[in-house]
Amino acid sequence: MMNELVVSKVQCPYCGEQIEVLIDCSVSHQCYIEDCPVCCRPINFDMSLDQDNALSIIVSHENE
Image 1 (cartoon, rainbow, N blue to C red):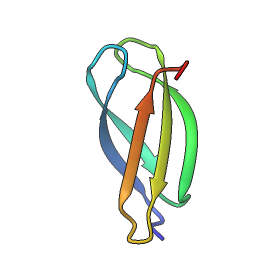
Image 2: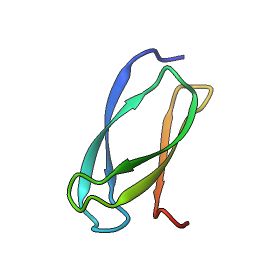
Image 3: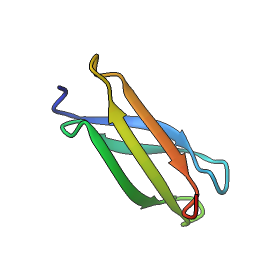
Image 4: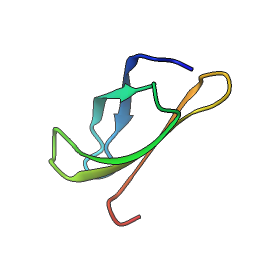
């Protein structure tokens, strides 16, 4: 398992801006909310690492 912080780019589901987020890869699955630095709306993050340490990030609206 990776034990590092990784910078990743995602698209805000509200304003459409591409933003950089810092992902803690020491945990294989995380769900959390982080505000968009552009429009300040809450983004749901669902992050997971598979067996090969491939990172998957799904972002969605607060009410999805």
